[in-house]
Length: 204
Image 1 (spheres, one colour):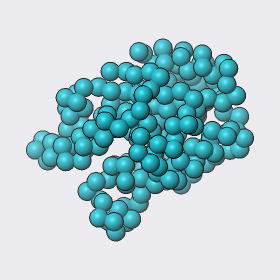
Image 2 (cartoon, one colour; image 1 turned 90 degrees about the vertical axis):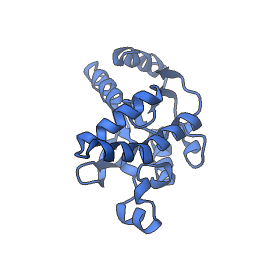
Image 3 (cartoon, one colour; image 1 turned 120 degrees about the horizontal axis):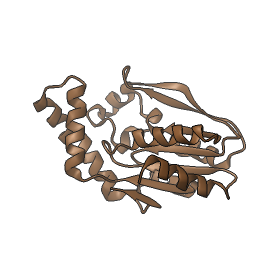
Image 4 (cartoon, one colour; image 1 turned 135 degrees about the vertical axis):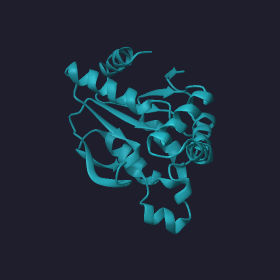
């Protein structure tokens, strides 16, 4: 399914909704961020009142991860402020006020306060992230607030290749890149693939 086709499907759902909250989920390396950004661009070009919220702004700070002994697992479900994320998504689903949310600066490896704004009059809100459809609390509390769900699920071998290349692109040698991907990213991907609920649209 192409980004244009996804935009068509989202617009069809949005016609009968006061606000449409769309979850775009998938494991690390699935391409969900790229897809979400393309769909956002298409919808904006068509004149839609649309905004996008990445889940990454809810990473716990590195100091907190160090204190909890979780720095090596950064990116795993337990390294996010999931409860805080749920509260913000609840407010977005209510749709009656502006909602400010944090973002994430990958270069600085740090969250950025008030990086995203969902306006009260935004008709469509795209939520993008790995763990949106998890059946594990508190993540499972998100599902009732989504009006439409999209899940990207490439084969594991494809994910491995992409995730290793991602770390090579960040300056690691191939051996270190593979160790990094297989030690943290792939376990996180398997969690997403094994514990995400059913989705309205699945893209392999």
